[in-house]
Length: 160
Image (cartoon, rainbow, N blue to C red):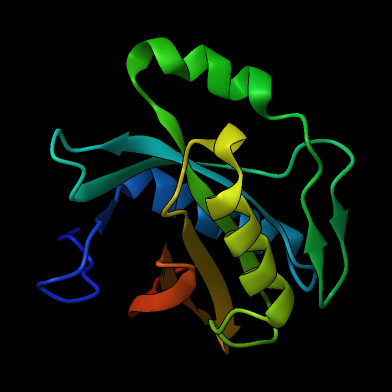
C-alpha cells in the first residue's frame, strides 16, 4: 500500500502494512455489530516524516465493547516492551464503527489530544484509524493529530 498522505507539506505520512490492515479487518469481522479496537504499532523513518504501521493489536482483556462504543483497557505495555528491541513503538489507536462513519467522535478527539499531550506515550502525533462498515465493505478513515487537532489523511474501501 502506498503512503497515505495528509498533503505534501504535512507530516508524518502514514504507510499501513498489509499485516496491520488484515488484522483490523479480521477483528472487525469477528466483533460483528460491536465496536472493537486496539493500538497501532510500528516505526518512523529516520527523519520522522513517514510512520510505518506494521501491526494492529486487538483489544486487551477487560476492554468494553457495545454497538456504539469501544473502551480499550490498559494492559498492552508488556506487548509494547517486547517490541521495543525491534524498534517497534506505539503509533496510535484504531477502532471500528460497525454502523457508522469514519469520522471521529468528540470522545475520540479528546482521547487523541490527551495521548498527544501525555509524555508517557512518547507520541506527539498519534494516528487514529477508524474502520466503518458500509454494506459488505469496510472503509478505513485515517487521522493524525497535528498541532493538537485531528486531521483527516485518507479514506479507502477495504475488502473484508
